[in-house]
Image (tube, rainbow, N blue to C red; front, side):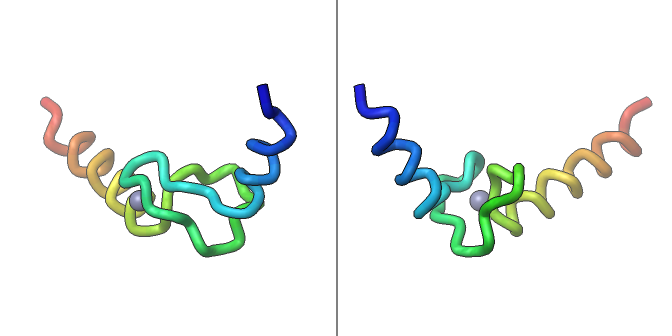
Length: 53
Ligand SMILES: [Zn+2]
């Protein structure tokens, strides 16, 4: 029951939803994944889309 604490923890250090690493970049965006994971995710989606038949 510590909503405020978790709120500030989220502000200080966001963790990547994919690999769990801390996101050091400006994390005020809606992104929940670090840059490499975002790139990887979009690349996988791209590959999957074009491999689908
Ligand atoms: Zn990541």
